[in-house]
Image 1 (cartoon, rainbow, N blue to C red):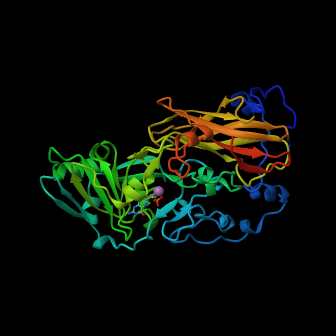
Image 2: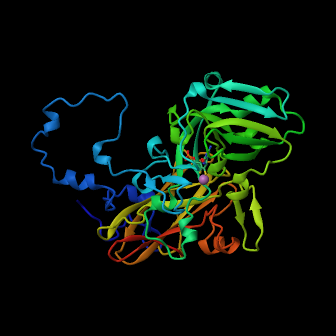
Image 3: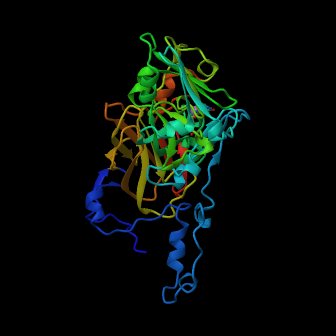
Length: 429
Ligand SMILES: Nc1nc2c(c(=O)[nH]1)N[C@H]1C(S)=C(S)[C@@H](COP(=O)(O)O)O[C@H]1N2
Ligand SMILES: [Mo]
C-alpha cells in the first residue's frame, strides 16, 4: 500500500497538528491508513492471491433467509451492556457507535433503556386512549391507528443520561466511544402525527399538558406540553421501514423529536390531557437536573448541540504515522447542525470538518476531515454549533453549571488522546 508519510503539495494544513484541506487533498490520490480494530477485512484482502478463482465463485452460494441477519464475520458488532448505573432495575444497552458508520442505526443495535424490562404485547391486546380535558374521550386499537395517514422523518433519539460516564468519573475512563456515548441512535421513524388524534378528541380550552403513559410494568409516565405534541410528535409504528422492535416500544411508541429520550414513551397506551403537569414518579425521581447553586431544573426537555469523533476513538489504535480520515457525528435537539470544528492539537487551533449531507433537523450529521498524524502525542477534539448559534461547551464549563451528582444532559466537548504508540483513549480537556 502506498503510504503518504510526508506532506505533499496537495496537503494543505488548515489547522495545526496535521488537519488537511479536504477538497485539495481528495484530488491527490493519497491512501488513507486504517484504524486498527475497525478494518480487519482490509488486511485480509491484501494477502489474497487474485490469480485463482476463490471457492465462492466456483460453487453456488446459500439461498436467502426469511429474515436476513448480518454477516457472521460481523458477529463482534454487538450492543454493549450498561456499565454506568450498575442497577438491576434500570437496564440499558448501548449502541457500538465506533463500529458503525453513516447516520442510521440498525434496529438490532439501537440503544435501549427500559426501567422494568421489555413487555411482551400482542398488538390485538393493545389499546390507546386519549381522555381528560377533551370533548370526546377516545380509544383506538393498533389496527385502527395503522390506517391513519403517516409521516416519515429521520431523527436521533438520545437518553438524557448519555455521556454520563464523562461527568460521573473524575478521571476519564478508558472505554470505547459506544460505552461512553452509545445512548444515542438514529432512525427513520414513521407514524401518525399526534395532532390528528388530539384534534379528533377535541382539546378543551384549558387543556395544556399531556400525561403520557406506557403499558410496561415500570408504568413510565412523562408530562409533555401539548404544544410539542401538536408541533412534531408522532406515534411511531415503523423504524427504518419495519415495525418497531419490542425494545423500542412495540407495538407503538410516542416519538418527540429532539427531546430527551425518556419523553418518547414506549408501549404508549394512554394520554390524559390536563391544565397542569402531574408530578409523576419519573418526573420527581429521575428527570431533574441540579444546578451548581443548588436549584432544581425541571422540564429540561431539549437535547443540546453535541458531537463525538467515532474514528479514531477509545480503545482503537493508529498502527503508524500517516494519513487518516477523522470521522464522527453531530446533532442538536433544537434543529440542524451548522458547523463542526475539529482540533488535532487539544483545542488550540480548529478547522471546519466536512458535513456529509443531507443535514437534517434534529438528526445526526456525519462529519469528516483528513488528518496527517506525525506520530507524536496529541489530542483530537470536536466541537459542534447548531443553526441557532449554540456551541458545545467545554467539560469545565458544563461541570461548573451543575451540582457534583447531577449528570443528565451532558453535551460537553469530547476528546481522544493519541499516544506516541498510536493508542487512542478517552481524555478530558
Ligand atoms: N414505557 C416506557 N417508555 C420509555 C422508557 C421506559 O422504561 N418505559 N424508557 C425511556 C428512556 S429513559 C429512554 S432513554 C428511551 C429509550 O428508547 P429506546 O429504548 O428505544 O432507545 O425510552 C424511554 N421510554
Ligand atoms: Mo433515558
